[in-house]
Amino acid sequence: MSVSQEEDLLLERQLCFALSVASRSVIGAYRPVLEELNLTHPQYLVMLALWEKSPRTVRELGEALAMEPATLSPMLKRLEANGMLTRQRVAGNERALAVELTPAGRELRQKALSVPGTMMAKLGLTREQVEDLNATMAQVIAATQRA
Image (tube, rainbow, N blue to C red; front, side, top):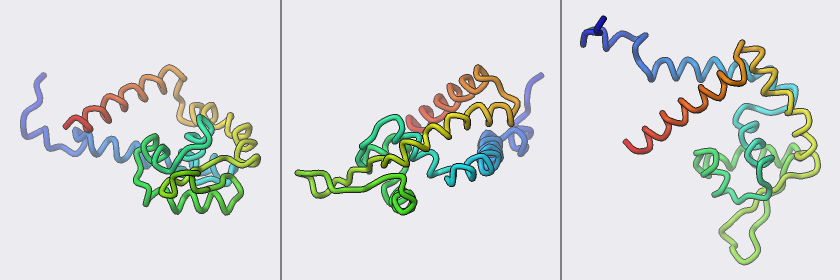
């Protein structure tokens, strides 16, 4: 069965709509889980990046998270105020700001280990389904960057 051009404009056929609703819904499902860690979803993403590698410059974090430094700065300040990380100028490069986990920030990783499993159970997804979704989203992201 072929789809007519008229049907192309149905809301339910729009990739942008499906992605937008899915994004809001998934982030909303994360909210109560992350509240137990005293993190917002964007802060959780920052912490994930730092758990992979710390210290990192603000520029490196921005690249890893696909965020502008102006978007990151308020989150980093809040995480620093909460004792999760420190921000210091890089020796020899006064323009670069290094972000490093504190002991409390490193310890929070242990509590966060339960988040992926909790979310898979909450959403009724297997690890394989999550991996498949991530691979598909990576393809979409790559396609938008090429466009």
